[in-house]
Amino acid sequence: MPTGPDPLASVEYWEARLGPTHPGDGQTWPYERCVGHLLPRAPGSTCLEVGFFPGGHLLFLARHYGYRITGIDFSPRVQDVAPAFSAHGIEANLVQADFFTWAPSEQFDVVCSFGFVQFFGNFRLAIARHWDLVKPGGTLLMTVPALTPFQWLLRRATYQPAKFCRIVRAHNPAVMRLSVLRHEVERCAGARIVSAKYIREMTVWFEGRDPEMQPWAPAVLAAVRPFVRAARRLRISSRWFSPEILVLARKNSTSTAPLERWGRGPSGPRHQ
Image 1 (cartoon, one colour):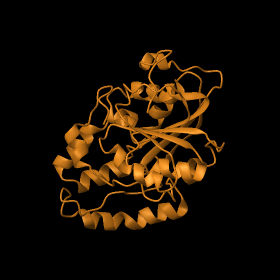
Image 2 (tube, one colour):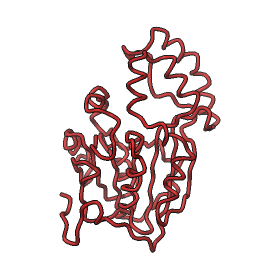
Image 3 (cartoon, helix red, strand yellow):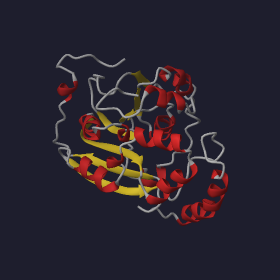
């Protein structure tokens, strides 16, 4: 996790959230239906994912969109997933570094992150850092968890208090609202919002078997499951129950992004 602008999550928090350590096969992508038609398809387009580990998003984008991919993550396990990319014949530039002190020598056609900026108190600086790495004419794709009533109440009802408080403390609720995220991206120099919406229907991505769940959690989750399936079947997303927010913006082709303010000079270091 980057040490950047007022991080809200501790190292212990991330160690406790150890999840998949393999990117999968890169055959499916949860955002394909939402934005697949909006992303550039020019062969050799460059793509940076911020907070990429374990790499499933990048693997899909490389395999299906032909992107030349770079991923940056603070995790020391970054290189553990390199063989999965090599197995598919993909040359991936995987960087283990702090996003806020990393000094790349280039901007990218696509810059994306999926659930990253909400972990910082100064989320505006995190968004600005993303934006400065987008090429003129390029695309920013950003998602954050949505602070919708259903998702909030479901966690409040099923998590044990210690787990609920730990998660709340690690997230900045101010940016977990569509109006706020859209506004903060829109105020970036040369930004044009292409898509801004709640997504993923009524998806619930946790289960009741976690030892830090309340004993009644499986019953609660079973009770809401028919509604989750119905929303998915009808492809309905809403500010009342959806789990995620997505914003996609284009940068004006005449815009400039001052990489120098992030530590890159005219002959600054290249990432390896």
